[in-house]
Length: 110
Image (cartoon, rainbow, N blue to C red):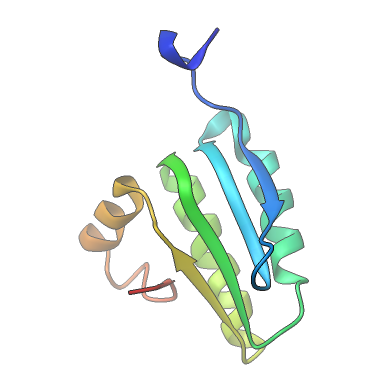
């Protein structure tokens, strides 16, 4: 199925070229849960005080994906580091707005 026919885009991850971090592309949902978990596992092993996660090419994150991001951010905080999220999709911004306490670990770039 092509994206025009309503199929979800397969989730992929690629290293950022200009700073330490990763760019995710596609949808973060039930079908891509393992890919997201693997990508976030790699992200948490990127060295540096600040690691960037570019979500500009992600259209949707389900609740489990948001929980995975919160967990990854908490891992960074426990290590004395920061996971800085760039260009989150509307779905993430909406969940953060609805559940600010649960999502407090997330740091979104201005």
